[in-house]
Length: 433
Image 1 (spheres, rainbow, N blue to C red):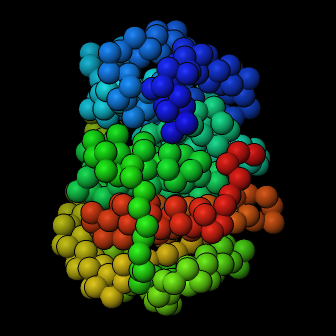
Image 2 (cartoon, rainbow, N blue to C red):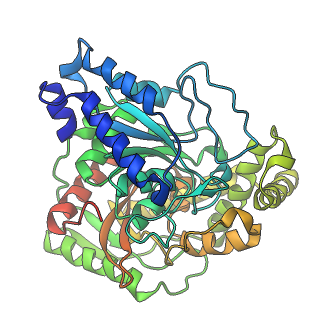
């Protein structure tokens, strides 16, 4: 927000801003591994164009360097999806998300690293590994791991991500960021049976809100209000397994619950009726969604873990096991739960992040086990299409950041952002390592 304000006022040259971002990327990228493609020359040219725009004083992201997840098309580039199987033909036009960013004055400095077909919460490819800037021995998460690494390392102030089963919230929690997934009614992305939505990653709630407002083309989302008095349900019981979450990952939830109660919110322990059907339903879609995307690709060029993953997905599709009734019944139970509450708070993670490694060289099972252990709190809200946000809330003894997840009903993005901003005031977090 500060960069855009200074550029709008003519006090800051967007070319200088982009030069600084590119210098930071050049200095840190080898260690961080955030980008699949850095657009240095193009970004400088685009920054000069922004400086000369007649509407400069009105641009919400005037001159702000932005990273975009490598799943949307940028004119002259190709969306790689973390895979060598995707054609490298330059896109003839910008994706709508990119058009909105450009219209708002943002400068797109690069495309961020993702795992192949965005399947796993570890963002590594044969070309590099996205590492957690707080603890580089650990992954930055996934599938928006490159975006999280870029923001957490201070290479860009905000980044775009997509979230199909936690792909914005999980890396945000791991890297100490605010990461919000819009509801399906606002920013749904094609594929994955409608579960994936666009979102934003930032170091502050205000920046995440500003970025989301541009992505959604809804300026009001950038205006952070007060949350009022909310009915907040708190649960640390994971869906399906109901197994214990480690105490170090529960502690930030308990501490945040105390803060919210002290701020006047009505805070209670309560857990939705998740049900085995819904939990198994997201697992089935996790396999079947990427398998649809892989249908048109050269299977021999996919990584071995991906080939095994999509084979199972095709088998589930052929057996007719991906049923819309699963989603309808889960949405009904979710609505039943939220009739009594405004917000649900859970841990963002159910296990510590995996170590940074060349996971793409390992088997599908070796990738699936840590993925499933890590992410049980996230995916059901993709199936429901409800908005959700991860907010920094503490630190693990290892030094890794930890986050809490806040969920609300469709149309409630402003409520989540207002509550997150209140938590930022009550429990400030360090913005950068």
